[in-house]
Length: 411
Ligand SMILES: C[S@@+](CC[C@H](N)C(=O)[O-])C[C@H]1O[C@@H](n2cnc3c(N)ncnc32)[C@H](O)[C@@H]1O
Ligand code: SF4
Ligand code: SF4
Image 1 (cartoon, rainbow, N blue to C red):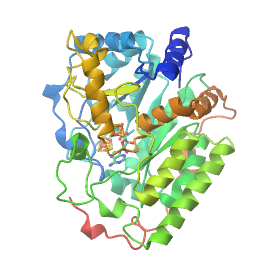
Image 2 (cartoon, rainbow, N blue to C red):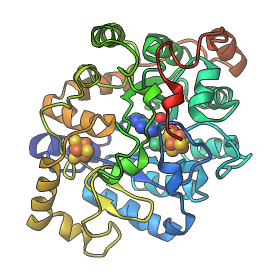
Image 3 (cartoon, rainbow, N blue to C red):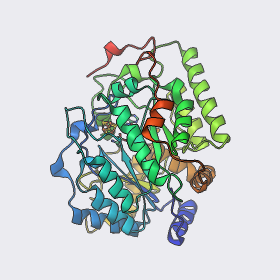
Image 4 (cartoon, helix red, strand yellow):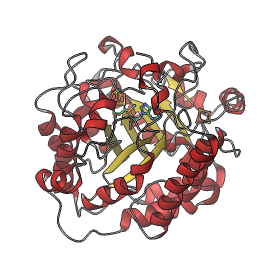
């Protein structure tokens, strides 16, 4: 995942000492999306008119490199809904950044939103031609029917797995490549997590687990920036269905297995401290007590170029493309505002942010990730047909595990 150039080494070392180099950034290239996943509300805010032009993307790439960013994730919405994605890949790789593109892996949509194009798989190839080695592709279940239900699109499982096998056929044993499954842990898939790790390993992927974040109440409204982007889906919330001790036992079983698999070398991208924090969060609702480094080890940029210290805080800083932004970023005024924002936050479990904080706190997660990146693969990549034959769960398991209340879910 990380390209260990001398410049990147120096920035990581400086970040470890000062905790004031923004080594990680996230840019949502668009809010548009071809899917309408049940837990996600980003697609409702898609607006092509707000998005940056290619010349602005180039400026952004140069500015990120000057600020010290080592690793950038391009997410969304769905990045392939933007026609500028390839230009962005070229711009950021050209500046020597390590780049990861987060995608749903599904070429067509569900007809309710934008369609990202029948040439999706050719565009994935084009990104790899440009030198992109890191994709994160979402998959929350090995039951095609369950995953299609979550994505609200028939055929989503087949499409996402087909994309994974195409990526794997090019990157399987490429040094520095770490294609990854992004898996949202919810009430629907808690018992599936170890098999999702085995599946990832079999197709030459790593896997990253992220506890689901949901509105606690349909009328909760806009409690913060990010609340617009998540939804009220009680059937996905862990704990909505059973008694407290049973819920805790389910969570412990799942995370005990994940931690043991990680200790045995399974390709789980989350650090051990993050997995422990996820277990705690799912059992108690409490976020990691250590706080976070939003705005100094990492930051976020919205599709229109607005800068925020992380995904959740409101826009109150200079725009990233403002000519005075770099001076502002290094000013005492910025540091005061940043500190206040981070200190008043209730917390979150976003792996990209919280794991970055945790990696630079103990360095344990950092070395685990480096080890995973450098590990060479043996064997051969699977074809889509082999992956489906081995891994698709086509028995009649219910989509929503017994005891959940799908009829209570908000639209
Ligand atoms: C917002 S999507 C953007 C990239 C791309 N559209 C995708 O789905 O992979 C990034 C990740 O956030 C996850 N996500 C969406 N809603 C979430 C929620 N309410 N809680 C936790 N993760 C969520 C998605 O499953 C996905 O893995
Ligand atoms: S999770 Fe990704 S694919 Fe699903 S609706 Fe949200 S942005 Fe789109
Ligand atoms: S804990 Fe709060 S401030 Fe820190 S990254 Fe999460 S939402 Fe942002």
